Amino acid sequence: MEQVSSTIETYDLENLDGIEVIKGPKGTAYGTGLGGAIILHSGENTKEATSLENNFTTGSYGLIKNNFRFSHSDTKLSLMVRYGHMETDGYRENNRFERDGILVNTSYKINSKNKVSFLLNHIDYSAQIPSSISRSAFDEDPKQAAFTWKSAQGFEDNNYTLAGFSYQHEFSSRLDNTTSVFYTYLDHYEPRPFNILDETTNGYGFRTRFLGNFNFLQRKAEYTFGAELYKDEYNWGTFENLYEENNGNGSLKGERISNNKEFRRKFNGFGSLMLPLTDRFTAQIGLNINKTHYDFRDRFNTGSENKNAKRNFKTIVLPSLDLSYNFNTDHTIYANISRGFSNPSLERSLTPEGIINPDIAQETGINYELGGKFNFF
Image (cartoon, rainbow, N blue to C red; front, side, top):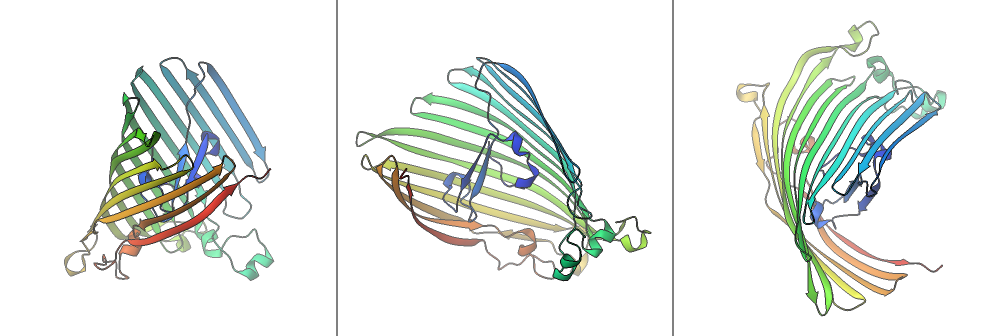
C-alpha cells in the first residue's frame, strides 16, 4: 500500500521489514518524482503460527525504547499488530523526543483468487527543537540550544494517521489487480520564536494497479498500468508567540496572524512495459501523466487584501526508458533516461506578499544514468 508523502524519521524502523529506494524519476508507478521514492514494507506473517515478542532498549541521554509485536497467521487470516514507544532527552538543550506508534497490518484470503487487506498506522510524537547555533557558540558549548529557541522552548507536536483498505483479484495466471482506498490525517503544532504554526491536513485517495505478462519472442514480457487520485484539505494558521512575556515559561499563543485553507488535487496515470529482446538484453518503457490543481483560500484577510487564488497546473507527460544487458548472473550493465517533476511547495507557490504566483510552474528535469553491477568474488 503506497503513501503520497511522509517524514521518514517518524517511523519506528522495527516496524519495517524492508525499505525499497527508487533513485530519481524511474518509478513510473510511484509518481516519477525528481527525488525518487522510498517504499516502506511492513511485511506479513507468512508462517502459520501465533507469536508474541517484546524488545526493550535503554541507553545514554535518557534513551528508553520498547517495541511490542503480536502476529497470527493461518490458511485464511494474517494479522500483525505492533506498538512502539521511544523517548530520549537528546544530546543538546531543548532536545527531548518522545514517540508512540501503533501499526496494524492484516489480510484475509477469501479464496485462491481474492484477498482483502487493511493497514492502519498511527504515530504521535513530540520533538523539541534546539535549532542551529553559530561556530563560536558551538566551540563554547556544543550542547547548547539556540538562544531564542531555548527561550521559547520551541518544539513540534504531531499526530499522524494512515488508514487503507485494498482488494486484490487474480483474473488469471497472466493478470491481477490491486485496488486501494486510503485516508491520511496530520495534526501539526509548532511554536517557533517568530510565530506559532497550527495546521491540520485531511486527505484521501484511490489507487488501482494492474500487473500482467504475455509471451514475447518465446519469453515472458511483463507490463503494469493504473492510476491514482489524491485529494486533501490543508488548513494552516499562524499566531503571535508571546514567549518573551511569559515569565520564562516558554511559548504563549497570542493574536492570530493568518488563517488559510488549501484544497489540493493530484492525478497520476502510469504504465510500463518490459520486453526481453534476447535472453540477455531487456528494455522497459514507461509513461506517467500528472495533473495537479491548487485552490488557496485566505480566511483572514478581507477586501482588497484577500489572497484567494487558484492554480491549475498543465498536464505533464513523463516518459522513461530502461535498458539492461546481463553478461551473466554476476555482471550487468544498464542505462536509463527518464523525465521527472516536482510540485512547488505551498511556500514556493506564493509570492512574498502571500499571493499565489500565476507564473510558477512545476519543476521538471531529465535524468540520465549509466552504470553496472559487478560481482567478482
